[in-house]
Image (cartoon, rainbow, N blue to C red):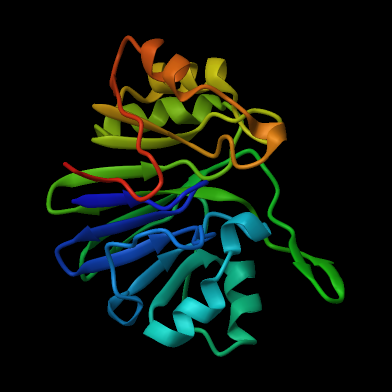
Amino acid sequence: MKIQFLGHSAFYVEGKNLKALIDPFLEEDLHQDFNVEELNYIFLTHGHGDHLGSTVELAKKSGATVVANHEICIYLSTFDVECHPMHIGGRTAFPFGKVKMTPALHGSGIQTDKGVINGGNPGGFLIENEGKKLYHAGDTGLTYDMQLLRVEEVDVALLPIGGNFTMDVEDALRAVDFIEPKIAIPMHYNTFPVIEASPNTFVEGMEKALGKILAPGESFQF
């Protein structure tokens, strides 16, 4: 699998039969390793604007299927976007492999012109492709449920470290100890002043995984 960090919590994921975005809140003028028209999936961890991002526009342009919780799919259906609804703990097979939706401790309200509407339960995704497993935690605080991921033998874990709305560096390091991925990559930090954090402190503090920092636009193959 190949991933490209697109800033904040957004990633491009490429594998066999898979060209997908996760939480496409995209930075402008950033080099992208994909053509929008070739995208076949968009994964949404929750409904907040800094994760929902350009989902509707991208899905309409590409015809990609959006994978999200049931409530977000109901909302997106009003824009004639094709969706595959999932819920926490569910695992299902796709043409590219399997996906499991994992718990997250956060919110998921969707801001609209008519106010905030119910965005269901926030989550994360465990994506399997060609024998590799990628875990995107979404926005979340530290939770003991992460220990259950240890048996999944995660290859790469994408973890928020910015604090305030999610885990900070200290809790993200505890999450690494819970999950025991081969590689852990920080996300959701330094986008706004309130989530300033040091990715170097995160990487240097690891004992049970290899830490890797990706700059926006940087790719990584595993």
